[in-house]
Length: 255
Image 1 (tube, rainbow, N blue to C red):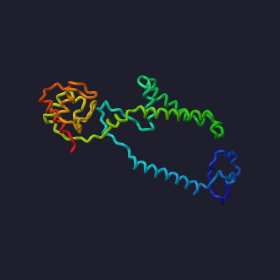
Image 2: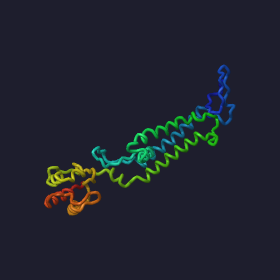
Image 3: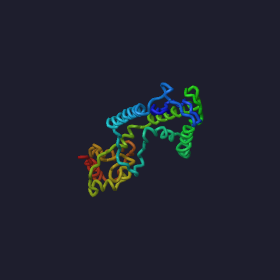
Image 4: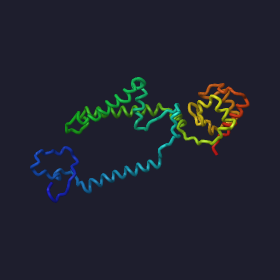
């Protein structure tokens, strides 16, 4: 550049590069509409755009905070995890037969590796100066295929997921203090219900027994007749002990 004309930012890759460095490079102001001063014009625009996106992002985080679930429990084998939205397409891919079970390595490593490898190689597939999409069919086709695949798999994952069950299994349930030396808990621990509902009645294969809102009579009826995935006649003790158990579960209410 010539002295006194300031630093210029070249915004067009079609400006030819001259290999002969012994000559003075041209003043890029001779390309009207394709250059602008790097400082302050270009940096000011970048900072303004960045500020708008940052403020918008902060507003979204305040208006829609990240949902929280109950504390992670490694003993809960019935919990179905769900990744963040940007990984839903991979989550859906692993549900298909050719990418799950004995072929899990294909869905987890091979297919994503090929896809991202092709994306990385895209700049080398067409190194021509042409920018119009119709003149660059191969890179454009790869990009459209990748976008379409991700959109389709994400959509399939969203529409096929049981959101009601997910919200229920991840709900934060207020715990209730109770005495493990009480007669009701001793009956609970002596029956098979502890295997499904957990040592602390927090739930597991079965739901939590805290804050159920059930009366003692309703609890006793469920113990005999079953409900949902719980088969009937699971309780094998006496009616007196069942009454103690039912009253114990009824008392498990948050203050």
